[in-house]
Length: 348
Image (cartoon, rainbow, N blue to C red):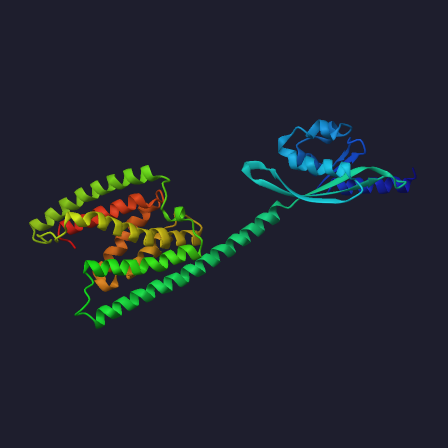
């Protein structure tokens, strides 16, 4: 071998050794004749312990390399045709490695077939980048639909306020039938938005996940707040600073009222707050709670500014409570119980 040929071989070996892609060469019997450092890292082997040994002996029984083995075996059976495959291998910390395997014929100096060379490129970063872009586009698309939904809800609220203002002799904001009609009018575009955005109903709190925790915490919070509120109202009544007569509210209206609370929480927490959480990319986002409370509070403007303020403050509490388990059971129970408390003590 001439010095020039030796120099070329040395330069080629150095170039292969410095490649970021893994390179594995096998002779026609399947014996490993070369592994570069990137291949050692990918396959978790050492070159000095692998070269000269059969590929099948080292790797064929390794389940983590099953898809890679299939590519190498296919190339060995048909080395004359270049093969390109995209595969996935398990990585560290439960991450997936996305690889592109290119195999080609390995020829000797005289041009005869001498085996197979496989070049394995790790494209995990590119795949993750594309997945992030796709997710960003999906979120932006969802939020666009949510924005249109928000405009429609505000439009409905504006129309309701206009009707109350111009037909004050016919419409009463505190009328039970009016309240149900207003709520159902808001629910219709909400359901349409859910369908349009293809949102799984389970992500809106309509799920059995964490239901026990939600139920227990809902009961405990209701009892605590009911007791504290009762003591506060009794103290205020002592100083004639609170209503002394309860608002008429029959037991027959209890279940329908809880159902109404469920629909309100589906609208506020399930649709609005969950949409903001997805947009901010954080299920514990206080900004999502704050924006939902402002939004939902303004939908009560026809009841007066005091109602807007109460709804806003209650929304902050309900939103934070909902974020503990993202289940509507607990927050519906809490909402309904506090509402009955307010009716029973004449606060509403």
